[in-house]
Image (cartoon, rainbow, N blue to C red; front, side, top):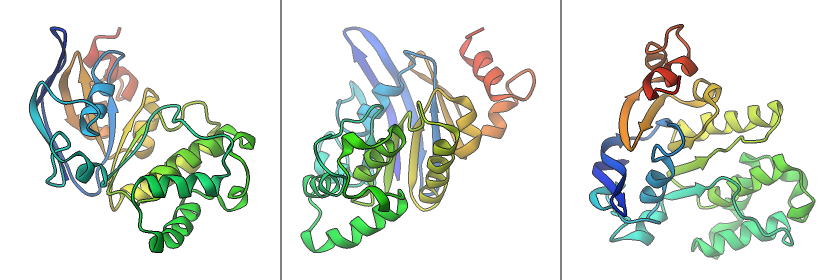
Length: 238
């Protein structure tokens, strides 16, 4: 469970986030939307403990990342846009490195490795160096590095940016399957992706939470029952 209470963040007098309140539970696949500068990246950094709030609180399954960062982060897998990889490593070496960095006990690595390779369909490339992989497989490896600890919360920032339709389809299927028993937050500018994967939408605009709803309900705000027109109507991007 993620609980956000009265969460605000200021940068030099500029309010990036303004009094956000919401709660996420197991099975929530959340599309985090908003125009550029709405506060999406700031929110993700607060959830993962990279930033401290100006006021308010975040709880990750009862742990506050501001005070118990390591405990909170053990429950989170975060894949930023253009996630950094080590191109000179093989896929298996990189997953072992990620597991060690996350504190996974050595005795649990084999099963975690096998599960992760299966989830991301990496069987055929585990012994290849990362710099030899296609963009689609590099995306999968980045997600696999976050999955190796089987986190209860997975945060994906623009997970299908630049992928072809087949690669997007594979990532969407994974999100739907993993999200059915965990929490996934997908920050995206691809509005078609919202309907493809999400069962909930959190829409930010100018630092405020302006909608917390389902994709179907969000479409009612548009002139032609369409996610794009609803987004433009709510955020004023006409």
